[in-house]
Amino acid sequence: MLTDATLDYGSRVATALLGLDALYRVESGDGDGLVVVNLDTAGRFRPDAFAGYEEVRKCFEALREDAFRLPEPDRQTYYGALCHSTLSFITWRQHKLSFTSQIGDFLHVPAEPASEADLAVLRSELQGLLDGMGYRGTLAEQCAAWEEQTRVPKEAVGVVVQELMDQAWERTEKHLMKIPAPRSDGMRLVPVSGVAFNARCDYLNRTVELNIDPILTRPGLKHLVVHECYPGHYVQFKLREAWERQGRSAADGLLSVVNTASSSVFEGIGDSGILMLDWFEDDDDRVQAKMNRYRAGIGTQAAWQLHALGWSEDRVAESLRGKSLVGGEGWVQNRVRFIASPARAVLIWSYWWGERVVAPAFSSVSAERRGEFLEYLYGRMHSNATVALFTP
Image 1 (cartoon, rainbow, N blue to C red):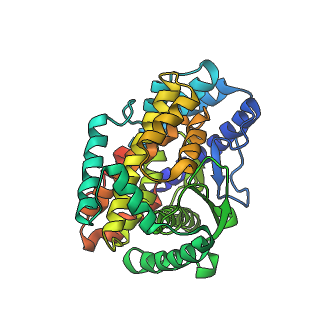
Image 2: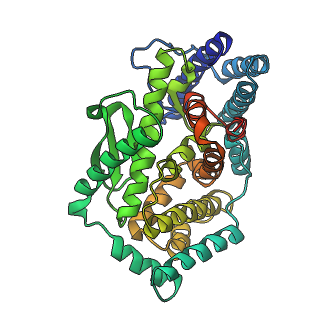
């Protein structure tokens, strides 16, 4: 359980972040904002009023100093990182910040794209799996045949997704924890097109917006369901709501903030969903898991090409087109839209780093301590460094 001092500190962080978000929205015209989800629908935490970014800077400098006096070592580490991310965000708005500095200072990950060596390993692993499944030809030819074999027609997507949602809810309650809500509170599917994402959890409206432009497969839909719903973002938000009311979680957990220290772990929980639910049914799921990692990696390369190397969007799209393996033109175009936004460009790195932080930590915990770890993982905001501070 968190101490009262940390719960009070979390409330201060929440109101300061909301104040920064309000200032940023007015200054930038960015309708999505810095705080993209606010679970405090009752308005218990009012935004601090800031006249300008210098006032916000002074506030977060004071919060950074106070963070190192918190009783819990993991909270000292996390809130120190959060304040660093936020102060860097303020610098970006006041004076600009290089793309490499944004990656390192917002997300606390190495400021470099996925290496060709890492991607070569993933391609080799994919080819080994597909060879064993009987697919022949080049890797691109194997992936095309696999995609066709597992493809879900657009008219069947709704039924398949609902079945997967039902199974994911049941497996979450069986393997992880009781969800503090009736099944009727769960998510429903809304197909969308022409958007800059594969799928998005609109928790407050209980909808998953699914981009139907890419080629969709059952293993891919299964991944999106666990990522966006159970045990991913829906469960993350639901537990934060419930546990904050019970005094088990701090108020800043009611906010989903982009480009910050918690971004990688937030996405990593979703990307580790199949593992956490013990739901690798067959080699199709294993191919999808490798494909997720691979496409996250080429996403970082695309963002690097666009923002660090100065390539045109058309050239970046052509590069992605030659590497993507699956998904078709719809996937290429939504990735280019995603990385093109200056306010979201570095966020692609959270998908490259998140699973590699969360999955090993989850796997290292014994069955006897799994409940403690899950409360630690879901009940606190985390940087990449603090996930590993739980003692298995």
